Length: 198
Image (cartoon, rainbow, N blue to C red; front, side, top):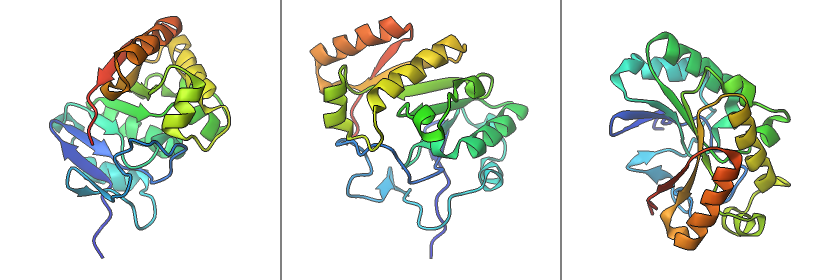
C-alpha cells in the first residue's frame, strides 16, 4: 500500500495534510468525489500523522515561502499537533499559515484564538457567504451555529492580535462578494477574493 501523503508542495509553499475530518460538506470542495488534488493522493487511508512525522518531512522550513496547514480536512481538529509543528517551523526560521473554515472554537470546545498568536503568521478564514442561510446552503455544516461561530472566531483572532483575514471564492458573484466585504469590515479584518479551483 502506498504511503499516505502528509506534506505536499505547490509552488513555493509546503502544505500539511493532517486529517480527513471536516465540519463542513461544502458543495465546491476540491475533495468531492475524488481522493487526489493537484496530483497528490491526499485522502488519508491510515492513521493521522503525528507532529514528528510531519516535521521529519518538512526538514528545513526555510526552503519554502510558507508552511500551510491545508489538506483534505479541517486542520483545527488536530490543534495540538498543529501547534507543535508551528513551534518547530518557527524555531527553524520558517513561516506558517492556517487555512480554516473557522470552526476551531466549536471543534475544540473553547476559544483557540489566543493559542494561535505567535504560532501562526497568518490565518485564512473561509467565509464563503454573507448570511447564515447562504452559508448553510453552500457549506452544509455538521455543527450547530457554524456560521456564527466562524464570525466569532474571526473576532477573537482580531481581538487577540492574530493576523487573520476572510476569503471567498469569486464564483459567488460580485454582489455577494461586496456583502462579504461589509462583514469583514465589521469584524475589522481584510477580505481576500480567490479564484475558484474546480
